[in-house]
Amino acid sequence: MLVPAAWIVTIGAHVGVVSTHAVFVALVVMSVLLAAFFLASLGEMPGVLRVWQYVIAAGLPVTLAGMAGLALRPDSPLVAAALYGWMLLPALAYVPTGTAHADATLRNLYLGAATLSLFGAGLYALGHLAGVSPTAWMVAGLVAVGLGQTAGIVTAVRQNS
Image (cartoon, rainbow, N blue to C red; front, side, top):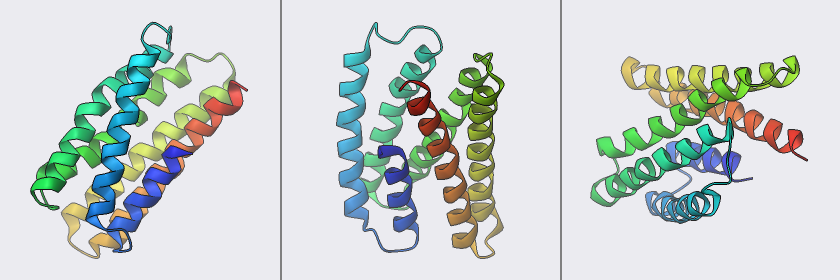
């Protein structure tokens, strides 16, 4: 699954086991996949799925910004913008996805995914702002985001299988 893999690679980059070049290559691949999926899904995502098409449409320039940032320098604000973008875009999309469901279990799973993802983004930001053991806070935030987004995608897959 691409969602948990992306967050595992991101965590690996933060703890120094994944190179900047590997992250750059992952962003190139991600950009190609996003563009292809967006084009293939035009007219195929009605209702609440349209929100996810917007996530893909917004996510492509966010990802390209991350690529540009890494090409310039790894500490570029563009890299941070891409990272926060991918923390927040899916998290915000889980809210209408959850509220669109009459089934309480599905609604709660999607809203829980949103909450955990937003909480993780907050922890990550705290790591940036606090300066006290920032890597620990940032990794904890990335783990929370990864778990939240993985829970959301697993719910979607199981719901539609």
